[in-house]
Image 1 (spheres, one colour):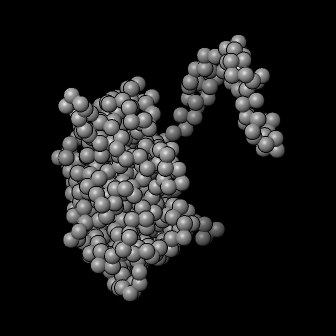
Image 2 (cartoon, one colour; image 1 turned 135 degrees about the vertical axis):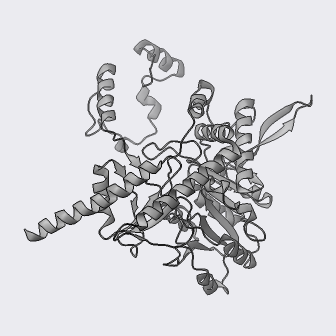
Image 3 (cartoon, rainbow, N blue to C red; image 1 turned 45 degrees about the horizontal axis):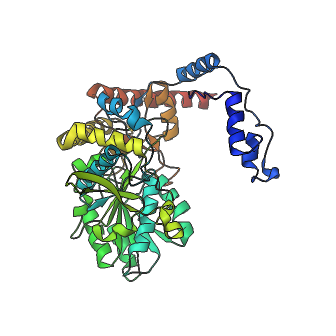
Length: 464
């Protein structure tokens, strides 16, 4: 916890120096009807020793579980050196480099991050990160609308197979800015976007098409067909991708004949641990022609008057940087610490290491799918190729199974029927390189046991 060194006398001297009588005077512009005397349900302060005991008690509530839950946040092995270096004071306490004269070390690190992300996605340019994957996708759609000078329509085709949380954020941020989203249906057998659904909009003006690869179900979309169709319509292609998968899959910059136009994604798989929901960071890359509409900031490399290599902020499109109302975004704060971790992670494991992580994750999923398919009453819902997630159908409500599996120390997956009503009793299961064969065999055994226990309990209840 932070230590506040200022005594009452220190505070008095500072107030005198700035010409006010008390701290509340600093907030006199706040209307009186908005102020409160106390906070309800907030306990009185406790001392440091009591606080330490309290937080230890909270910590003891954490369960150590075997995680098979993905859906946008993934458990990967993180080399110890990643956060040992990231936690150093010069990284941990550094703030976003708004100023062009910021630390050369910090600027170089961001430049290296941009270079790695541009290489991984096959795109020309990368910015210095976004809040997280969902808002990055929303910013990309707004960017596509601004950038598409050939097509002034404000209609966007959105694959239903895009992460449901991302689609909710798109509705919250982009749809409120007079942008119409038209959802594309998916094939109930393949789990991928129905290509025939595109033809319904052949004669309509479409500004952009949004697709996720791998999609929310872990299935691989026909991104080449979708990209070429969109470009024939003079629509831009906005992609949301899993960065780990790009070690195996075709880079978005090579989709179809011309490649995707804007690529976003969640950077959490790159060295950021699962931590009760965050913090995460988003990334965004694009073609050179669109760079002036990219939100955030970009670090460039140059040479000084002596010919020495130097780094500087080249494009800063935020509202703080003079542009005000003309800014491309005002929510593109650089998640600097997490970008540092991701850069160190990618530097340590390298291209081949990332490929090994992706291959092992894929192979583990194939092993688990084979074992699950052999169980009675368990069905693999889709038959398209997967990366490291798949959907299974259970004979009973998925929520009941998840609850029972948790009693066995396993986080079984994500029930899907709340976001996809047609996928009743369906569970999205994820496997990464962190799972051993023993872990997966245990998952299958506990799933069978949980189903049997639930059925037995149901029969007893029916008799009563």
